[in-house]
Image (cartoon, rainbow over all chains, first blue to last red; front, side):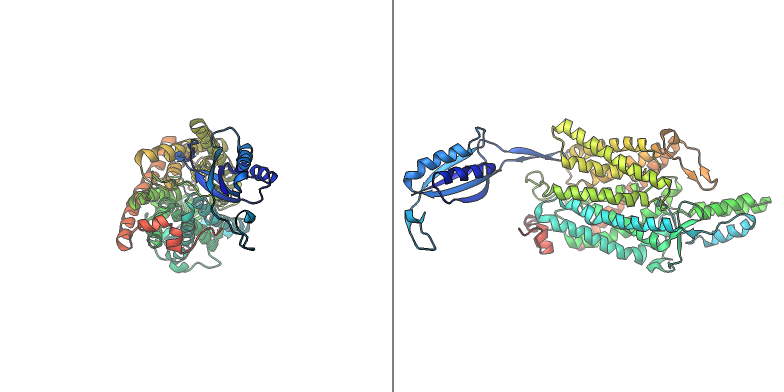
Length: 112
Length: 482
């Protein structure tokens, strides 16, 4: 099992969700995060005072899937979240050791 | 015009002398004009609206979320404490005779002010209820110290503010308001002038002339110099703006100033506050006419157009210089225009007011963006850059724009009952003297008061409290639980 963690532009969330639903992924966790990468941030000006805002708002989505689905998930997220502009975000894949569904006690892939 | 005084106060002796001599002259007994009374009552409520919630939200939106309540609290507290002080002794110190610098205690606790008491307007024989006048002027005393709190926002201790405000209105606001607005009133001057005209022989003429001189001399120092201030450019804005600058310097910069991000937490609320300020300002400027007359109409149109002009001037200048037309720019420009038109409201013509607004918008922008950084003082919400600078532009501009040749009204002389000869150099000099006196009194007075408060309770919150935010550490509350 793997966790696919993607940091995306906030307005791309619905498209990513639709794309994942289409390949049979039913569930994700979304967190509002801030960060920076190559997109360095922007400048805000209040009464002549300039503020360099270097941490930009993004959404982090986490999806737990069976190892065989990882490539499809990456493909879907990439396709849906891409604008071609700097700041589209990144995808990280992590190993997942165990999973439990709290209501039923099911474990691992049947819990996903 | 607010430089009005209840005609009975302190003037009894002079009036009696004049009235005796004027036995043959027509002497209209003043009466309360119900329409004027209704308008000044409405205006008093409008000026309160400027302060709460107008000013409170304008300022509150500009601070960080963790200090929102502390700013609202400072403004609301100021309103309440000054309201009490005003009726205890503030009104008496400001609007009774005494010296040219401060009044006396004859009306302390509103002694002698009843439902029958009258306060003169700017027309001979037409008065409003003195109790209404007390309320109207009370709201001015409330908003002036409330303006100061923006300068040391986000770091001033509440106990320091709680002590500073009563001291400041007592030793700085009341004297300056007395100096600018206290005068014998049109009825006293008119009666004394008629007595001079009616005197038949030389001896009687001399006595009557002495009585008239005494009436004319019974006025605040800045008023006597001939300085014009329609609604409080010197008393309110220069005064508060300078006290703010001194406070910003003496309290010190916010922790992390220049390093940490300190952007406004809600420009939406700032826009709501600025708009309420504008609406309430009609009570401030137009109400200062004390009568619902054509001059009130002039003050009204000027309060519209000078504000529009200053807002646009600031916005377009910022757009050209910084590349973006900002909301904060347009609303701050509007406030700068309101400040500048305050002393000029009933004196300048509408086209003059537009010019005044443009000048104020551009110069205040320069002070808030360039000068502040050049000198490195942390006037958190630009109280100095908008109110003191805008107030000075307005005060001096009034001296120029009152000129009948520039569409202004000229200056009415009550001793001759018509508009006096206008001389620009004389008028501008009088305006400058008024500004300098205000700057000196406010500056020195404020330095001493901050110093005293610092010794007694300490001016600023600890760095830990400042980092945590004054809402939680001083008020024990959070602005937004979401």
